[in-house]
Amino acid sequence: MKGMFALGMMSRRGLMALALAGTAVFAGAPASFAAPKTAITIGMAIEPTGLDPTVAAPVAIGQVTWQNIFEGLTTIDKDGKVQPQLAESWEISEDGKTYTFKLRQGVTFHNGVPFDSSVAKFSIDRARGNDSVNPQKRYFASIEAVETPDASTLVLKLSEPAGSLLYWLGWPASSMVEPKSAADNKTTPIGTGPFKFVSWAKGSKVDLAKNADYWNKSVSVKLESAAFRFIGDPQAQAAALRAGDVDAFPEFGAPELVKSFEGDKRLATVIGNTELKVVAGMNNSRKPFDDKRVRQALMMAVDRATVVEGAWSGYGTPIGSHYTPNDRGYKDLTGVYPYDPEKAKALLAEAGYANGLTFTIKAPQMAYAQRTSQVLQAMLAEVGVTMNIETTEFPAKWVADVLKAADYDMTIVAHAEPMDIDIYARDPYYFNYKNPAFNEVLKAIEATADPAEQERLYGEAQEILANDVPALFLFVMPKLGIWDAKVKGLWENEPIPSNVLTEVHWEE
Image 1 (cartoon, one colour):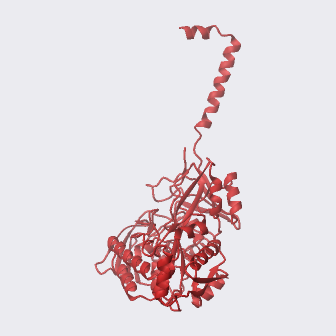
Image 2 (cartoon, one colour; image 1 turned 120 degrees about the horizontal axis):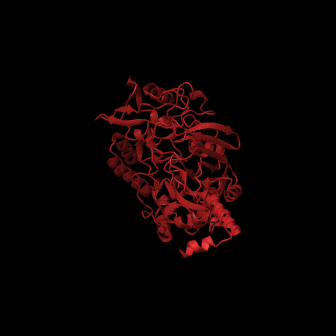
Image 3 (cartoon, one colour; image 1 turned 180 degrees about the horizontal axis):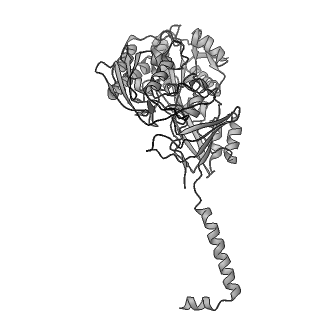
């Protein structure tokens, strides 16, 4: 009663003031409970040369389109595992040479054309054909025939078992494309994914919009639109993040600037792994690198932690083989030949180089390669090895001299392809490394489709490389993600180069 009495004694002016104040409170309330944003701007350092990942290799293409516009029979999830996608299930024959896929029904491309077995056959035949320019064409080489018993069944007949086929079919290069629009996908991509292509302002950005007719109703796509904005200069990337001109840079280009974001509560820094394996390859057919003891000694002369600090501001994961923590069956083999300069000197002496040796490293002009070379140069000098650094223009000069001609002593490059441990079995390839036992392990991997057996065999392959040291295995470059702290659902790690938007949303 006391409260009611007090209110009753108020003046008319007081009541009016109270009423207006209440109006202000309620008028302001929606701002506290505003609907979450449904648009996002993603920053990228490199603009793609086109938008069709099935006809060109640059990873930037897939970073815009894969799982956003284009999808495959299978897909690779954020843990690097194979999952069904446009194929909902499959059966593999006992001899491993016939794959029968049951395709999803009710899937349409963004132009309204239905997805069925005839479209899947077109996509695979286009990738494996004589005129194919598919960047992963070699992975389709084992497919002898593609059959379509009915609209929802696809059968692949192989000439030999390919146990990694389901994994390869999940790559951007294996995306399903609609026959009539395929030729124009470079500029106006048409896929089955959760986002449709809207426009491409060359030199600036690519705009996407939510696909309201997306087939996968189990996925709740929160974003209504997304833009990929291209900013090459690291300082400009940092400025755009601070100004809010971009909401996220999933791969920030300057590790030395990462600490400058400390204390900025609006932005989150997320450090993950990529597939970028930085290795110093050696010409295994050229002296002194044809002696395994020399290669092993050089590995023991390298303190990987110091390399990571000097090359990439402490961001990165040391590796002991050509494999990353993202990859199935990964083993940490950095302890096989750990940093031990005294043992390195002794092994060099045993190999006949007690008085040291001299060679040249052909180092691309990229920052990580130059910095790593300088750190290696100082470390190797500590064990009596003189390494001269020759800066080599990348990609043209490096591809001509190293990759094609194998005219080099040592080089350094970041290998970007996921699960590409098989490069050490290629003949010819620039390492000039030959080990029949390693090749047999890789054949055994393809001979089985059992994931557990494959992981065991991948472990064996890693161990062989860690012991043979055909390259100095240094570190995995990090995925330096900086984005608005309210943005959720971006991948922390990158088992395959991508910017998957399906689960991205703004925190309410």
